[in-house]
Amino acid sequence: MLPNFAILTAAALIPLILGYLWFHPKVFGGDFWYDLTNLKGADRSEVSTIKLLSTLILNFFIAWGLFGLTIHQFGAFSMVGGDAELLKTGVGGAFMSEYGSSFLSFGHGALHAVLQACIGFVIPVLGYVTIFEKKSFRYFLVYLGYWVISLILMGGVIGQWGAVMA
Image (cartoon, rainbow, N blue to C red; front, side):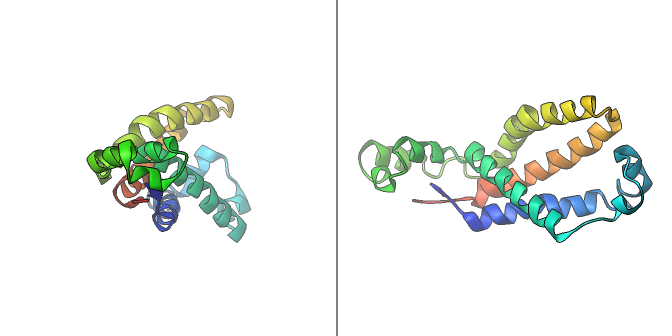
Protein backbone atom coordinates (compact mmCIF):
# COMPACT_ATOMS: atom_id res chain seq x y z
CA MET A 1 0.00 0.00 0.00
CA LEU A 2 1.25 3.41 -0.97
CA PRO A 3 -0.10 6.75 0.20
CA ASN A 4 -2.64 8.53 -1.96
CA PHE A 5 -1.06 11.98 -1.88
CA ALA A 6 -4.21 13.68 -3.19
CA ILE A 7 -6.15 12.32 -0.21
CA LEU A 8 -3.37 13.24 2.22
CA THR A 9 -3.45 16.78 0.84
CA ALA A 10 -7.24 16.88 1.16
CA ALA A 11 -6.96 15.61 4.74
CA ALA A 12 -4.44 18.39 5.44
CA LEU A 13 -7.17 20.91 4.59
CA ILE A 14 -9.48 19.56 7.32
CA PRO A 15 -7.84 21.39 10.26
CA LEU A 16 -7.84 24.64 8.26
CA ILE A 17 -11.54 24.40 7.46
CA LEU A 18 -12.47 23.21 10.95
CA GLY A 19 -10.30 25.93 12.50
CA TYR A 20 -12.15 28.58 10.53
CA LEU A 21 -15.45 27.24 11.89
CA TRP A 22 -14.26 26.32 15.41
CA PHE A 23 -12.62 29.66 16.14
CA HIS A 24 -15.30 31.71 14.40
CA PRO A 25 -16.68 34.55 16.59
CA LYS A 26 -20.04 32.78 16.82
CA VAL A 27 -18.46 29.59 18.22
CA PHE A 28 -15.27 29.84 20.32
CA GLY A 29 -13.99 32.93 18.52
CA GLY A 30 -14.58 36.47 19.58
CA ASP A 31 -13.61 37.64 23.02
CA PHE A 32 -13.80 34.17 24.63
CA TRP A 33 -11.01 32.71 22.50
CA TYR A 34 -8.96 35.91 22.46
CA ASP A 35 -9.12 36.07 26.24
CA LEU A 36 -7.88 32.47 26.46
CA THR A 37 -4.96 33.14 24.13
CA ASN A 38 -4.16 36.67 25.31
CA LEU A 39 -4.20 37.98 21.72
CA LYS A 40 -4.55 41.74 21.52
CA GLY A 41 -5.20 44.34 18.83
CA ALA A 42 -3.75 43.54 15.41
CA ASP A 43 -2.82 40.00 16.50
CA ARG A 44 -6.53 39.17 16.46
CA SER A 45 -7.04 39.43 12.72
CA GLU A 46 -3.55 38.80 11.39
CA VAL A 47 -3.70 35.88 8.97
CA SER A 48 -1.08 35.95 6.25
CA THR A 49 -0.49 33.74 3.25
CA ILE A 50 2.72 32.47 4.82
CA LYS A 51 0.85 31.40 7.96
CA LEU A 52 -1.80 29.56 5.93
CA LEU A 53 0.84 27.87 3.77
CA SER A 54 2.88 26.92 6.85
CA THR A 55 -0.13 25.37 8.57
CA LEU A 56 -1.03 23.46 5.41
CA ILE A 57 2.50 22.01 5.30
CA LEU A 58 2.36 21.12 9.00
CA ASN A 59 -1.08 19.57 8.51
CA PHE A 60 0.35 17.48 5.67
CA PHE A 61 2.98 16.12 8.10
CA ILE A 62 0.13 15.23 10.47
CA ALA A 63 -1.71 13.49 7.61
CA TRP A 64 1.46 11.56 6.73
CA GLY A 65 1.80 10.45 10.35
CA LEU A 66 -1.85 9.38 10.46
CA PHE A 67 -1.29 7.37 7.28
CA GLY A 68 1.36 5.36 9.11
CA LEU A 69 -0.95 4.84 12.08
CA THR A 70 -4.10 3.92 10.17
CA ILE A 71 -2.92 1.91 7.16
CA HIS A 72 -1.49 -1.29 8.60
CA GLN A 73 -0.62 -2.68 5.18
CA PHE A 74 2.01 0.04 4.85
CA GLY A 75 3.98 -1.84 7.51
CA ALA A 76 4.10 -4.90 5.23
CA PHE A 77 5.25 -2.69 2.37
CA SER A 78 8.01 -1.33 4.61
CA MET A 79 9.08 -4.82 5.69
CA VAL A 80 9.85 -5.76 2.10
CA GLY A 81 12.02 -2.69 1.69
CA GLY A 82 9.47 -0.76 -0.33
CA ASP A 83 9.59 -3.25 -3.21
CA ALA A 84 5.97 -3.58 -4.35
CA GLU A 85 6.83 -6.62 -6.47
CA LEU A 86 7.60 -8.63 -3.31
CA LEU A 87 4.01 -8.06 -2.16
CA LYS A 88 2.65 -9.70 -5.29
CA THR A 89 4.25 -13.14 -4.87
CA GLY A 90 5.25 -15.55 -2.14
CA VAL A 91 4.61 -14.72 1.49
CA GLY A 92 4.06 -11.02 0.70
CA GLY A 93 1.46 -11.92 -1.90
CA ALA A 94 -0.28 -14.31 0.49
CA PHE A 95 -0.35 -11.63 3.18
CA MET A 96 -1.75 -8.99 0.85
CA SER A 97 -4.36 -11.34 -0.63
CA GLU A 98 -5.63 -12.13 2.87
CA TYR A 99 -5.24 -8.74 4.59
CA GLY A 100 -4.74 -6.29 1.71
CA SER A 101 -8.13 -4.64 2.08
CA SER A 102 -8.71 -5.26 5.79
CA PHE A 103 -9.39 -2.34 8.10
CA LEU A 104 -9.52 0.26 5.32
CA SER A 105 -12.51 2.18 6.64
CA PHE A 106 -13.45 5.58 7.99
CA GLY A 107 -14.23 4.14 11.41
CA HIS A 108 -10.93 2.31 11.72
CA GLY A 109 -8.97 5.42 10.74
CA ALA A 110 -10.97 7.52 13.21
CA LEU A 111 -10.36 4.97 15.96
CA HIS A 112 -6.58 5.11 15.46
CA ALA A 113 -6.72 8.90 15.36
CA VAL A 114 -8.33 8.92 18.81
CA LEU A 115 -6.42 6.08 20.46
CA GLN A 116 -2.96 6.78 19.09
CA ALA A 117 -2.81 10.39 17.91
CA CYS A 118 -5.10 12.10 20.41
CA ILE A 119 -4.37 10.10 23.54
CA GLY A 120 -0.74 9.36 22.66
CA PHE A 121 0.33 12.76 21.36
CA VAL A 122 -2.22 15.59 21.49
CA ILE A 123 -3.25 15.32 25.14
CA PRO A 124 0.34 15.13 26.48
CA VAL A 125 1.72 17.87 24.19
CA LEU A 126 -1.25 20.16 24.73
CA GLY A 127 -0.97 19.47 28.45
CA TYR A 128 2.65 20.62 28.43
CA VAL A 129 1.73 23.79 26.54
CA THR A 130 -1.14 24.51 28.91
CA ILE A 131 0.97 23.97 32.04
CA PHE A 132 4.16 25.76 31.03
CA GLU A 133 2.51 28.64 29.20
CA LYS A 134 0.20 29.05 32.20
CA LYS A 135 -2.98 28.70 30.16
CA SER A 136 -6.34 27.84 31.65
CA PHE A 137 -8.05 24.46 31.65
CA ARG A 138 -10.67 26.03 29.34
CA TYR A 139 -7.86 26.76 26.86
CA PHE A 140 -6.86 23.10 27.06
CA LEU A 141 -10.45 21.94 26.45
CA VAL A 142 -11.07 24.28 23.50
CA TYR A 143 -7.90 23.15 21.73
CA LEU A 144 -8.39 19.51 22.70
CA GLY A 145 -11.86 19.54 21.17
CA TYR A 146 -10.53 21.15 18.01
CA TRP A 147 -7.71 18.62 17.59
CA VAL A 148 -9.81 15.59 18.50
CA ILE A 149 -12.41 16.46 15.86
CA SER A 150 -9.73 17.39 13.29
CA LEU A 151 -7.83 14.14 13.82
CA ILE A 152 -10.96 11.98 13.80
CA LEU A 153 -11.95 13.45 10.44
CA MET A 154 -8.41 13.26 9.06
CA GLY A 155 -7.89 9.69 10.28
CA GLY A 156 -11.26 8.64 8.91
CA VAL A 157 -10.60 10.10 5.48
CA ILE A 158 -7.11 8.59 5.35
CA GLY A 159 -8.37 5.22 6.63
CA GLN A 160 -11.08 5.09 3.96
CA TRP A 161 -9.33 6.56 0.91
CA GLY A 162 -5.70 7.25 1.82
CA ALA A 163 -4.06 4.12 0.42
CA VAL A 164 -3.56 2.81 -3.08
CA MET A 165 -2.49 -0.71 -3.92
CA ALA A 166 1.17 -0.92 -4.85
